Image (cartoon, rainbow, N blue to C red):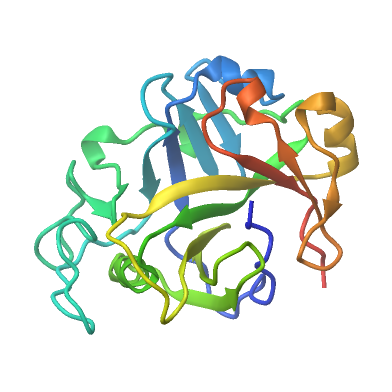
Length: 255
């Protein structure tokens, strides 16, 4: 998973708004429990400042809840952003049940799940503590960047790379304590109308060696990450029935 490249902006000079509060997934609670997570009676998993809610129904990604996310009517920023990119109406309008960021569903007030205040977090037996990255793929980097910016996000870094095959562009945003890494065509490369999709998650373990020991064959062999001094390993999610690819990383290095 190309989700271990973000580094230069780990400690931004400004506050990180737009906290990712909830990620709604179609996995069963049993799947996450089998991967060594503590799952509450409400089928939730707390990771840092984010709750993962397991519905056991439908597609792997079913929506996210982002504090202070905006829905604006952006008619032009070089090109039009229309309904499939930012669904909503007047500038500053509230999030409705059909709101999304380029196809990534935003949960309306009527759809929102439990908050951190209503959930008693417990340590996870596997030693995983938080979400490091959410990796998003898109058929058109410029379109999806514009959609994120229209929702209130700020680009915090970008790079071009061919490390994973075709030339691609990686663009980074902060969602509170979570990094959003957008992968898509590089400048000058062919684009498509494919909407943005959640490609996978990268989580943080307090001690990756201890997590590897706890998970056994469920976790691949840790290897050096692109970020200097960090390690990364793949969680064998298909073995337990988790829909999205997941990588587990060692903590960020303190400066």
